[in-house]
Image (cartoon, rainbow, N blue to C red; front, side, top):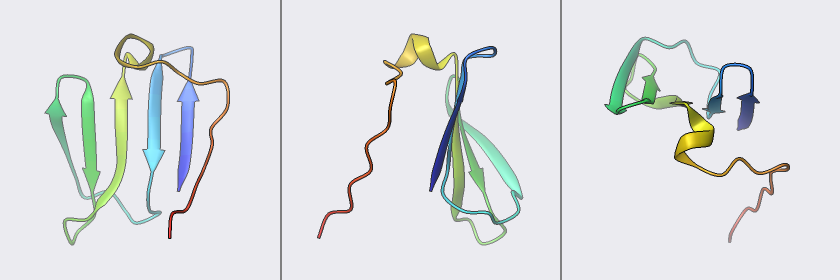
Length: 65
């Protein structure tokens, strides 16, 4: 998984897979889900991210279990 944030365009992108994106769907205004050919979520794009959430200066990654 990879998370990128571009402050110039205020877009946050969470990448779950490197699979080719076959379809995108705007789930909520400014929240776009990208899917592969099998219908699995490849990534989530959040437009105007700083207006929808607090952008942390760092990211903490925890695997539970």
